[in-house]
Image 1 (cartoon, one colour):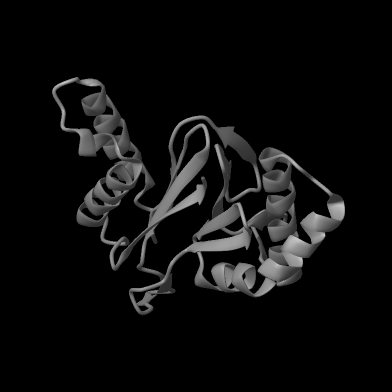
Image 2 (tube, rainbow, N blue to C red):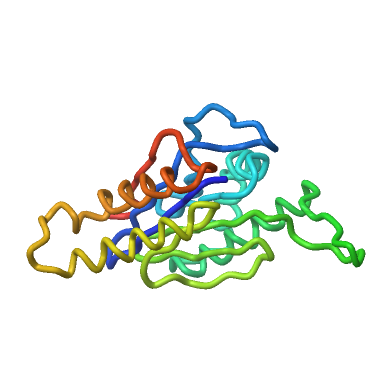
Length: 196
């Protein structure tokens, strides 16, 4: 249970998350950043399972090496390849379970892959799509997206103070609202910038 946000702009992408992570029904220490730096300008955010986050942290250097070997230059291609490598890593670790009909299905692990100027959202089934505006995943995603939409509408009003147009402040505000509305969200708030 968590909330992760990405807000791409022309030259960078602002990312953030809450610090609460659960293992089953147990809350682990509330200072877990759910974003993992894969390469200098490529970050992966994981929601849904602490073990998946650990696997990505442990395998970040391997993923970076595999991306370098492929020679991919643009952020979108790197993000799609990174998502496929993470899915393969989860598969090798046994992250498939069987549905009632006996067919394998992905466990509920969501990802955001961020690079300067872009974000790729990856659902629990492995489906993915590029995001033009802001994106959020985790149990607090709907509340955070609503807050970001409201903040964006307020920002367009010329009488609003300048600080409301700062992406870092919008992310902090949206995560704060999600933490108040979703008991699965909490802990420290982490906000970073990918790119210039």
